[in-house]
Amino acid sequence: MAVLESILAGFQYLLPHHLVSRLVYWFMRIRVKAIKNLQISMISKLTGVDWSESRLQDVSDFEHFNAFFTRELAKNLRPIDPDPLSFVAPCDGTISHCGRITSDRILQAKGRHYSLSALLAGDPAAREFNNGFFHTIYLSPRDYHRVHMPMKGRLQRMIHVPARLFSVAPYTVRNIPNLFARNERVISLFETTHGMMGLVLVGAMLVSSMQTVWSGVVTPPRGKKVVSVDLTRRKIKLSKGQEMGRFNMGSTVILLLPPGAVSLLQDYEPEDIVVMGQKLGRLR
Image (cartoon, rainbow, N blue to C red; front, side, top):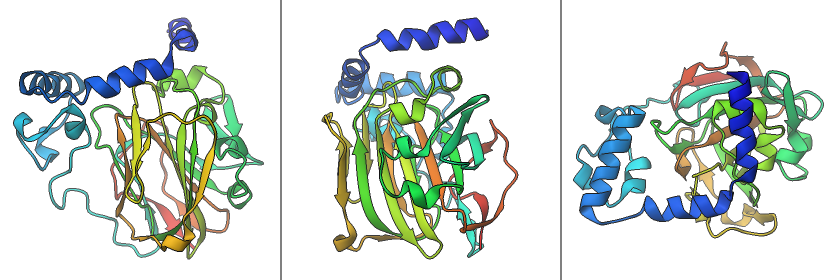
């Protein structure tokens, strides 16, 4: 199995990541009723989507597959943990790893670490999170693909980092070094009453688009250089549990918190399932 995983991961170096993703971007937005209904029916069945959680219940209610993929949940389906000092899961998914950020290093997979500074594309905020805490959550194709606030915050800046689009499936994470710092990503930095908070939306193969509630679609089009936008003057404040963005196809979210913010982490292990609004830990 390990050899096969290594071969499959190695093959990804040869693929035209952005070309493949552009084709998927187009394909998942076909509006021809017969085609998009078939897409939704087949892929939802193959991936095991729980239709009972969707606010809209019929394939005909969605204008294209991507609208289904980013579907809204039924009302009150994801209650936000009520503890005023808790911080919560920003999305549905599987815990990849979580814990301490040690001397600029974040655990990617067993035996593999990557640089916090590289993840944040050299932004000075990396100093805020050094020796702090992280949660990496992988979203599978069946999951709810909107991303919400783990705690209340005021947006400071957004950074778009154009890069590769390796798959972020678990076998790839185990085999490709520095994966999350090599893939395209959208970094959002918030000021909170407990210090800086970072939410990193990591793009991946077939993840053709990421967007935020304040700027709309960030990618595509594909950029050529890192762009950091100061958003302090817009005074964007988002409450705990409020939507902040979404993936148009699935990927990974990395939550970053500073060392003085957390008093307790819930006891999660790799491959544990979490849902948006579920308690990840307690703030000081």
